[in-house]
Amino acid sequence: MAYPVSPLASPFPALPAIAGVTPHVVRAGYKDWGRCDLTYVTFEEGTAVAGVFTRNLCCSTEVELGRENVAHGRARALVVNAGNSNAFTGYRGREAVEQIMEQVSAHLGCAPGEVFVSSTGVIGVPLPKDKAREGVEKALTAETCTWEDAAQTIATTDTFAKGATATAMVGETKITISAIIKGSGMIAPDMATMLGYLFTDAAVEPGFLQACLSAANERTFSCITVDSDTSTSDTVLAFATGKAGNATIASFQSEGAHAFAAAVHDVCRQLAHLVVRDGEGAQKFIAVSVTGAVSDESARKVGMAIANSPLVKTAIAGEDANWGRVVMAVGKAGEPADRDKLSIGFGGTWAAREGLPLADYDEAPVTAHLKGQDVTIEVDLGLGDGSATVWTCDLTHGYISINADYRS
Image 1 (cartoon, helix red, strand yellow):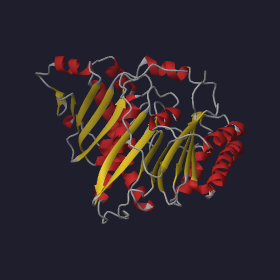
Image 2 (tube, one colour):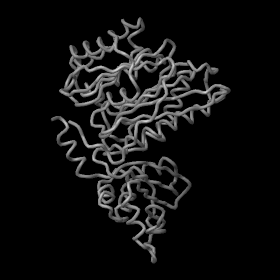
Image 3 (cartoon, rainbow, N blue to C red):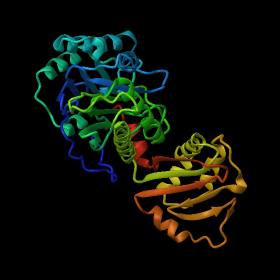
């Protein structure tokens, strides 16, 4: 089913090709839709890999095997199936994944553990082995595609293709990162939320690549929410081919390490925001800024309590400056908070300071702010130096419509 394009959509950027990375897409026919649904990406030998995965205890076989294989630090291929998550499918689901890994590894002459597989879509239906085999067979000889083709192919309920890029100087060498992501619903920060893939030509040791990705995840993907639900299939992988020719980055003592880490964070932040902007039924992009907490982690938890509140999200959808709902969400977060030190604002206008509504509070600028597509909520707890920003979207009738019809 096609969904109306999100009003918060961004045009797909011009993503540079990455030396040592070759993407392909084909139609395996996992669902009755007239588009490609299998993405196949190959990497030259020596490519480093890092990953973060869902903490959902009912995760897919793809996630289980991905966790195991990322520990080896090397990758030769990525296969992403769209339309079927292959989660909660027992041994039949595992057989389908192992079949894909063996089929690709035989073609490339590598170990099966160097082939990473992701699947996304309906839960509880085993991935059809025959369609997977035929799809992979076509992919092995398919022509190279564009990054936008790959981004569209990994999507499910997404309304627009999502990509991001960044560069950094490592010594005298320019390195590039190109990345794609899918995600629209079942988005909550319990590792990384959705399927995302970063590709870079930088020479990076797997351990440092993992450190950069994990750190970026904590401040980007783990700071977004659409509906508070954590997927069974969430995966973010980073692949580094080393083809840029820079001196290998092994730690923060290596030349250019901080610049590379900053570029990884930048790309992850761009991708995380795109997922929220395509939240199912979303009409508004909401940034929740929390300051004055006892710690950064406490600030993040307070921010997520606000961002996950259906009452806050529906108030924003209705452009209602009901700051009392924010007070409620702060109080239920389970984090240190003092009613008499709490301040609440919208778009730079404070509605309440230190536990009291402002005597001269004018709701007109707040109402005007809420009519825009980008909304900010400011909370100052007045307790310490901890701070965090989390991102979410409003909750509309569109979310219900999309999810009520998801399997049709």
